[in-house]
Length: 552
Image (cartoon, rainbow, N blue to C red):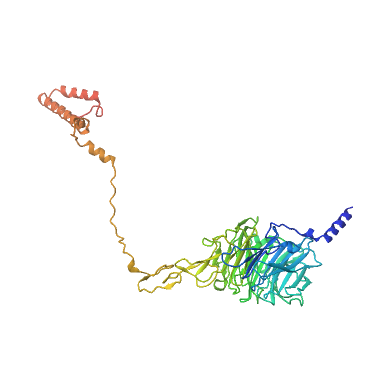
């Protein structure tokens, strides 16, 4: 009975490959890159609403075109690619309702009229979890890499699809050709032992439909990752190369003008920079703190000059994968290098370029056009673009659109090139938006000056000031002493209650008593009756000591 059940389950798996396929329509980070862009259009895929959104690239654009899945046989779209050249076609790879792997493309001659040109099934292969595509530099053909197969798909009639079995020991995670027609860079995981897979990559020579791409050079990745013994990444392990997880995705981008390669490994929180002509070890690496992951989730070169690297710098708690923040970092690799100490020339969002109103704060993908426009894609499937601004202006994102607008540099700042960065303050000795040279002999033009001012326009300020007088205060001790030893004769009542009055009364009585005693003692020196009586009186009163007032 048990054997029969096993045979039945095996038969079901063979007949229905879709059972191996996990579809979550609300997960926009699942199975591939769902945003693509060139200088004419930006395209994104929405598996929840079964639609592609096509946005023409222009400043302050809120115009969107819709192309629905029902024109195809797609059930779930994996990825989208568009040509680097100015073209309005876009290519997709997807899974249909029977679990077949599909490749197809749309094209348009007008703004919003996209028509399905061709769609083909990659036959004889089960549903692939790891299935990536890229387009060649001229936009004439598409290469696809999956766990089981490799193909080349021509975008011109008769739309020939050539498929080969995957003979490389690489489970693909990312592929990039850039503007080339001859070479590409493939990265993924290689099964080093039955229970261990490591990060790996290869330089591929492309042969179109003539033959399978040739593996020219292997990129050394894992052997160049050296972590401290206390770093939790030292224990990071991928057991099976083919096991798909959004947490173990990788990213790659190549710049042919500088012949440099960026490889992002978000699970290890690191981005590696290689020279195309020497991939045995990286030129440099950059990571984003210990205890986190997400740095390098998506990488790109800002434009076709290959001088500035764009990196999606997500931050997740390493152990729990809890999201903390998302930002886009731009590094001027040509001028500043690319190390842990290198500071980005722009971090988006920032105080002057806030997140688009239409976007969620959790970003998952990015891509760039050859002219330097940046597209970002969030966890809810929203997309927006920062369009490269001309000199003297910068991209402003505080707008209710899907693309940025241009605003002039504020007075005292400038930028003499096109790009995404903010304007910078004018240096010492210059002023205004164009950073004109201050012409006066006595000009006051410090860093970020707005005007060319003369020192004579400033008033001299005397710094020496007299010490201020202390304010009058009420000192009760002084008041008490003053009132006690003064005789107020303004009224009879004041005289009666004055302390000085009673002092004088007591003094008068004391002097009188003393004189009486002295006179009495002088007349009768041998008797002390008066002195004794006064002594008795003082003892009864007991005002001073025990009545011992004086000794005569």
